[in-house]
Image (cartoon, rainbow, N blue to C red; front, side):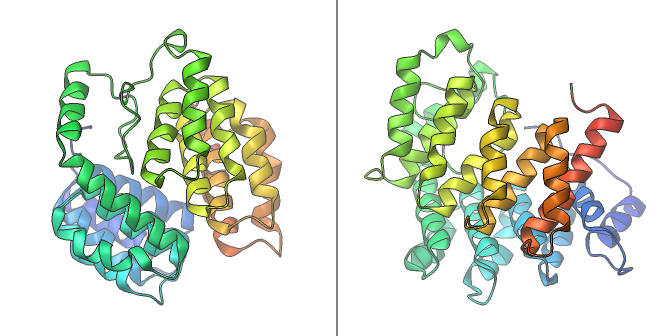
Length: 320
C-alpha cells in the first residue's frame, strides 16, 4: 500500500469543511474528492473527520465513508463502524459497507457484532457479515499468513484495495500474463463464481481471481454473475469492473444501469464503474440517469460523481 500523505493543518481544515459541507453549498462530487484525499492520509485525523460525516443524509456518501474507513484500516474506526452497523434505521447499503469495513480492518474484536447481525433481516447486511467473519478467520489462518508473505515476496500487488476476500489460491493480487490463465482455469473459476451452493466467501475468492486475470474472457465470466439473485454479489462484480477499467465490461454495466428493476446498490456501483472507464459512449447514459425524474437518489448521485470522474479523466489526462 502507498505511504501516508502529509498535509498542513490548514489543508486538513479545508478538507473537513468540504467533506462535511459546512457551507451548505458544496457539490457532492467535491465532497467525494475531499473524502478520498483524507483516505490517502491514513492517519487518526482522517479517521476522526470521516467519522463525523455519518450525520449526513446521503446514503451514497455515508456508504463511501464506511468504505474509506475500512481501507484506512485503523482500529480507531471500529466503534463508529459498529455503531453504523447496529443502527437498524440506517440505509442497508450503508450498514453493509460498515460490515465490510469491519472485515477489512480484520480485528477479532469485531467478531461478536458481526455474528449478531449475520441473521439480519436485510439480506445484503447479513451476507456481508458472513463474508466479513470468513475474512477475519482467513486472515488469521496459516493460509492467510502465507498469502501475505507471498505477496510481499512477489511485489506484484496491482490492486491496492483491501478486498472482502482474497483471490482463489494460486493467483496473487498482481495481474498475471494472460497466457498464464488458460480458458480452462477461467471456466473453472467461473463455475465457482456461479455456484450458489458454495459460501459467498469462496465465490468472492473466484471473483477476485478473475479480476486479477483481467482478460476479455475473464470479464465475460464475471459478467455472467449479474444473473445472480444477490444484490450484494452483483454490486461487488460492478465494483470489480470499476477496478479493472476494461472497456469490454461496458455493455454489461450499461445493461445494469438501465435496469430499473435492479437493486439501487447494484446500479449505483455500475454507474461509478462506467465513470472510471470513461469511454465517450458512457457519457449520455450517465447524464440520462443523473437527470431523470424517476432515477433513485443513490443512482442519480452516483452518476453525478461518475461524470465528475469522466471530466477529470478527459481534461486532466488521467486516462491513459
